[in-house]
Length: 328
Image 1: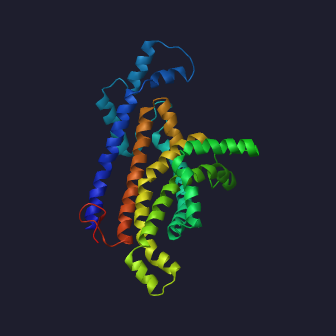
Image 2: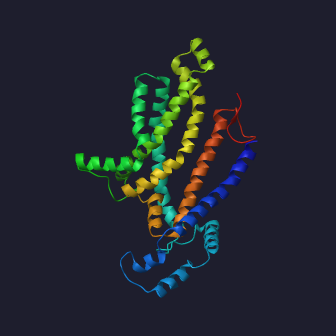
Image 3: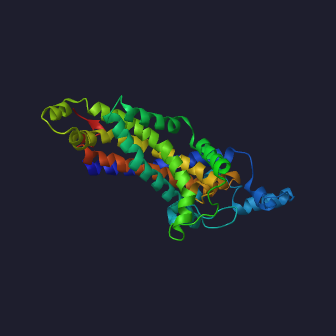
């Protein structure tokens, strides 16, 4: 039953997120650096005695046993405060998430929209006309996205804009409700670069899936009956070809979020990625753990939604056992 499958998947979300947070917790404690020293120095070179530093560590609970620290953070996550307060400034992490999450969500949404509007149709067109000029153009456009990291594309884009046009994106973020034009100027380039990297994988999968589907016997039969080629591709082949495309969208969604984390820092977007990087640099453990756990949950929920979409696209997909059990 679909409901039983959904219940199993939902039951796995929390343990997976907790495992990710435990890994981050362990890695952060193993890294060099001391958040107490950072707070006392105020980011400068102010000296302080070891006694003062140890007193601050005790006040922050950093000298407690590691299981106690993790349990305290977990309790703060489960009570709705999303990890309690940040160590550096004492601000509620929930307020930081409420401020930064919409920025990251909008950036990911823009990149996803561009992928579905540009790269997916281009992949369908390439598979439809495999071996002809549309296919060659699509593959040429796909290569930089597959071969070049998004941060390198971002640096090249900024350098090109400065050298050729003497212009760079705004550095002060404006929401789409405050100033749509300034918002567009700031997010257009990172969204396009994210979409290029994300969409290149989708294009490759869509091209292969459409080309393979067009070789199936039922498609050839439809063509032999006199149906227009456009109707056969869009009405018959495309729906079956969308199954591997959905898989690519889900598998690469983590890559999309990872790219967003990097590009937010490069372009100065005040999103979760920039907040995560800043918190990691000063060893603000609760913030890093909370933001990482939320990002892991986002990836898991997107993959769950795409798995459930299989049943709508192809009734042959069974949820009685493990997902993606397809019978011919």
